[in-house]
Image (cartoon, rainbow over all chains, first blue to last red; front, side, top):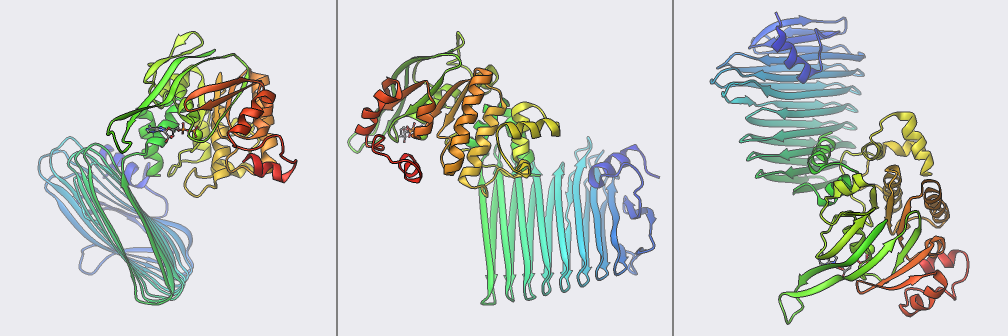
Length: 306
Length: 253
Ligand SMILES: Nc1ncnc2c1ncn2[C@@H]1O[C@H](COP(=O)(O)OP(=O)(O)O)[C@@H](O)[C@H]1O
Ligand SMILES: [Mg+2]
């Protein structure tokens, strides 16, 4: 069912050498390739047949779900709607990711809408990597959406990474936080050539003592363009922070707009934003430790995107 | 081992009357630093000490003159080439990174990522606790912490020539003594030619030779005793009347 190419893609987007342990759902070219459930984690196709529903039983601790998507068929635009219902008190890792191998000139794309309902006191780590490769000239598009609803005292950590090869990406992240809940979103995007990537983030701190931290790191090479928009809205006593840094190399361009909106007097919101070239003093320091200019650039970018 | 031959560093700046006024920040410096000796360079703020150090490391390019290192003309070499030749520089204002830890800098500096070796290195440079290894070298570090890391990455290179630019900035009073001992030990055990830019009496006393820079020139080369009257004239600090102890530290800061 999975060929060598598929396995390469899986390794990059899901760190999978082979079929994963525990629950998983591998989607290939718009169809189910393989699936496994576990005692605590159920996966079923939704009623509309547009995606899957992953249900994690309350109290499930230290389990993981892999749900990679691979595309290797020219001309395919795959759209999925996946729902994750995470039971209260559980602690799980969800690894998603989409790998595109483009062999032809027709465009290939994937639009994944992931909705998370995170129960009381549950902890979720969500890791999503996007990557495209292949000799074909077809445009590779990835438009991911995440919608996260955090109940009381839930905690979500999201690591969203777009490593390379994606021509066009339009990302939307939405989160609504209940009382005492927290979310950390770490987004890393590297673009090159004529690629475009845009990220829109809407975070609503609805519950008292909710906390959110959004960190975005962009590296913009060649003639590529990245835009980053983030809005944090506070509706209760809460703490929110946005940190967005973009490093421009070559002729890259960037627009970064962090926005803070307080609808409650006890809101504490802050942001830091920066756009610029690699700092000269960082380069000088690493060169004075014996690295060449190019090695120093690579090391700085690698750290920045870590 | 390091020879400065009629060194110049000039910039053009506006001075109100003239748009392109040339200014010699380093104004004809010549000197021979000898292998394994300990030198202290001092002088008023803005006199050109950091600029001189950056010229030696290759961070700034000379406007005139030559720099020779162990018999080789290094004036045209890059920073990387000079580093590989055995020159190391601790920046006055160390760079702060994102996503790079002390451990990363030490591995880059030495080419080692073996845990036991890194730990023995951290011990050698007298940094504790060891948990410091995984500290991010970013904007959250205090001024003193980043200077210690900077010093450690310089020592870690086992350089033939080590230049420390005001290593004591932000360092607490109790750490200055050990820092001086550490640099002396490196000098003694590894024959490291050591140049410390500092106003701190502890470093001036540790030096074999004191050099005073003013307006981009060496205005004095010799022992500390004879340097004191000149320094007093600069009103950097009255070295003679300073009492011991904490006031001493405040005085020489
Ligand atoms: N690249 C430069 N362009 C213009 N002025 C400079 C440059 N580098 C240093 N200067 C100036 O040269 C003088 C000496 O600076 P510096 O070497 O940092 O002094 P010190 O380390 O002795 O305090 C200062 O007035 C500084 O502003
Ligand atoms: Mg200086």
